[in-house]
Amino acid sequence: MAYSDKVVDHYNNPRNVGTLDKNAAEVGTGLVGAPECGDVMRLQIKVNPETQVIEEARFKTFGCGSAIASSSLATEWIKGRTVDDALSIKNTDIVKELSLPPVKIHCSVLAEDAIRAAIGDWRKKNGVASETAEAQAK
Amino acid sequence: MLKVLENAVPVACWSCSVAHNESTLFCPHCSKIQPPSVGDYFSAFGLQPRLSIDLAALELEFHRLSRRLHPDRFARATDNEKQWSLADTALLNDAYRTLKDPLRRTEYLLKLVGAETNGSAAVSGDGESTAKKQRKTPADLLEEVFDLNMQIEEMRMAKKSGRDDPQLRESLRMAQEKFEGMVGAVDRDLRAQWAIWDTGDESARKPAERAMVALLDRRRYLSNLVRDVNEILGD
Image (cartoon, rainbow over all chains, first blue to last red; front, side):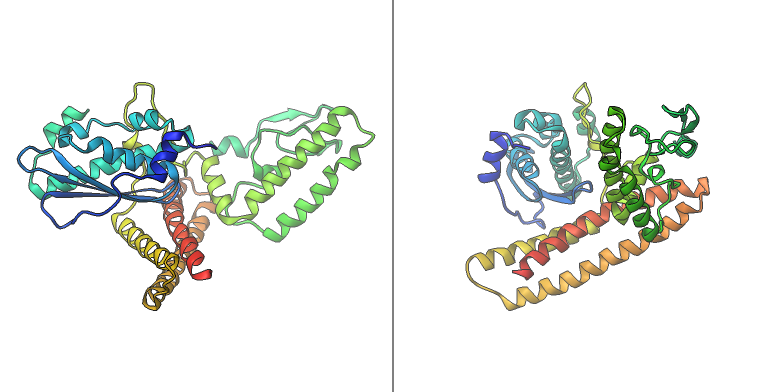
């Protein structure tokens, strides 16, 4: 199976690889896994407490090219958005952007899960209610 | 679903017209070769779907059927029979490869009974997220898997730059031992679930199937790690 040019690009030049201090109050960490292939993905965000804008995003993914590309793209997309806005990103958007084949759709699901997990962690740390935003995201 | 499998729809033999189980490779009545069926791998070997199987008997039966299906035996048969001997041989090979391997056999059976082992993350038409349908991995397992992956990467980088950190190597070796032990424990747990499932008690089967799906998930993470650690320690 051939990877699309965009997947190859993200794989060769992954954006925003790295680590943020997970103990910092403004940092949210999401660690998720795909049981069907054993891939693991960590996505971290640094949120401005005043504006709720995601100022930094970092990822570290152990998995296939599509999983790396999905998480790389996810960090690019969420940077500069508010947390509520970032939650509107759907795995299907990632599938379209990267032209992922059906067998790799779970990679995009993993990236969406990672965004939600990171935002969930940040909210928990900062006591931000999630009900209203979750409702908006749906 | 299993009931259907265990009472496979009988079909009439193309040659003698006597009804037989659709997955039989040869008609039990007239012994003529039958077209490849859509039946399951177990019945291709005349077995009931079970997780504990006699591997020696399976191998013997595989050799016996392979010889009987060999295309050379059909040199003077009808064109249909010639084709079926090739197609049946392919089916038998797939069935044998799947059933002789304990993990593939377990995955196959779970799929057969409708307990999905590969989270079918399909994109629904309205673009709705499928994230909720994903199975969850226990958080502590993820943490552990992630940490070891980080260690593995560190070791890989160190190797690339020509350094060979003995301390790192030692911790990898310990991790290797630990994770191999965890894989072994998963395999023991799987076998315990096999025994429960094989008793045939319907009320016990569903929980056993769920337990096996979770165990196979866990095993995939662990065996990826073992593979990566072995790769680094090996060369």
